[in-house]
Image 1 (cartoon, helix red, strand yellow):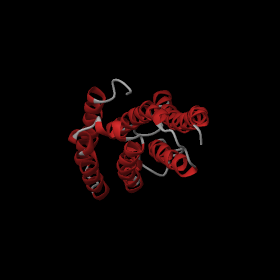
Image 2 (tube, helix red, strand yellow):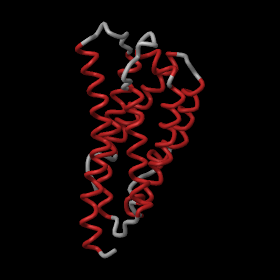
Image 3 (cartoon, rainbow, N blue to C red):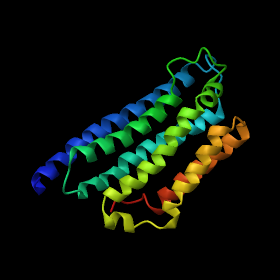
Length: 195
C-alpha cells in the first residue's frame, strides 16, 4: 500500500473508531441522564458513578491518543481488526456500566458488583491491548514513555484480579480511586499533546 492510500485510509479508520467510542460515550451519558431524570427509579451508587466517570474519561483518552495512528504507513486488515477490538472492549465496559434494565437488582451497585467478573476481565484485557497499541504506533511513540506508563500493566492486572475476587465495597472504592488517580497522572504527564 503506497503512502497516499495509507493517508486516505487513516481518516476512514478514525471515523469507525469514533463511531464505536461515540456509542460507548452515548451509553454512559444516557445512563447518567436517566439517573438525573428518575433518581428514585434505581438506587444510585457512588462506586458506579465513579466507574462511569472513569470509563467515560478512558473513552475520550482512547479517542485522543489514537490520533498517533496517523504515523502508520502500512495498513492491513489484522491491524485494523486489532484497533477495532480495542475500541470494542472499551465500548463493552461502558455497556456494562449502562444496563438496559436493572429491575432484578437492588440498584446500580448491586448490578455492578454482580457483573464485576465481566467488567474487570475486560478492563484487564485493555491493559494488554494498550501495550500492543503503543508498540504498533512505532518506536518514537514507544520511546516517549517511561516506567510510569508501563507499570500500568502489572499494577492494573493485580487490581483487576483483586476486584474480580472481592465484593467488599471499600476495596472497590479504593480500586476506582487508584484508577482515576492514575488517569489524572497520565493526562498531566503524557496526554497534554499529541506527538
